[in-house]
Length: 376
Ligand SMILES: [Zn+2]
Image 1 (spheres, rainbow, N blue to C red):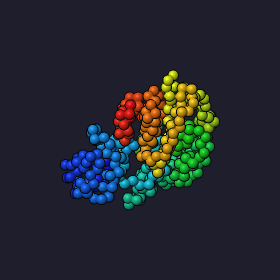
Image 2 (cartoon, protein in one colour):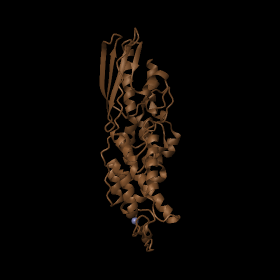
Image 3 (cartoon, rainbow, N blue to C red):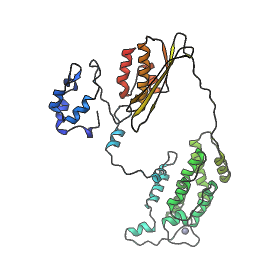
Image 4 (cartoon, rainbow, N blue to C red):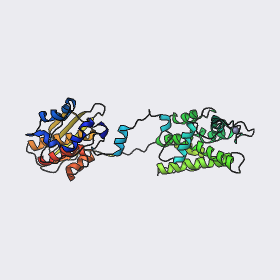
């Protein structure tokens, strides 16, 4: 079953409501003559390729646009929405640990949507407001306040330079890119580089609005620096619970730069099955681009000797389907050779639950599940 938007000819909608698929099945096969009476040829070919399955079981709708066959509004919306090409610059402005208002401010800034002289002038009112960041004020433009002004240059130097970033008094987007294109050495460093320009811009904006609409006359650097560092520390603590780095910002940056991933060594080995049992080790590969999959099974006795090794190329719709087919191949082989006591080892939680609990929420592999029951 496809999305409603792609349902075949609207003229047929009334028929679809009244006729069930079973009326088109004769002696367990699709009845081509009946199908030809109501559907166009191109759709008939699609229907003929659908496996009828067991007529003793009730039919269940499968939503092809989701991985598990269940309907979701998200998959339906993604199918019909008209989306623009993803802008990698804009997507980096957002991070789950950043408050929405921080990222939104940077988004507005990168689109030139803040109330500075150039924006006011666009509405036909010439604005000559002076900046709030320099000892000798100049005209207040966005690029000046966020990148070129005295306050901006100082805060970028205090926060970004210890991270190894060179600040260029120029286009704001360039300052962001300098941070994001920097070669980060670990995940912590990489996160800090991503959020730093957003936090700096937020702090500048906060101080700018305080001066513009409050009592303060000039942007104060000290508070801005303290609050930016506090923001960065808070994000570190939320994202990396065990990473508590505090103190002087320059020292913190040096520590962050030198962090290395912790190496954990864990022994993994094959474990013999119980006496009188054989063991199936299952694995698969799957390429989503072309749907090509390879399924493989190694079956050993309880001494570890190989009884048989099976492998086969397959065409699948998803990784889960490839996993299901792998399990099916191995289990079918065991049943056909008279092995009724066997253990299955597979790195798929869905298939493992399906075999042990006989339960799955994945509609696309439900059909195969029912066949396992019949085998067992
Ligand atoms: Zn200024």
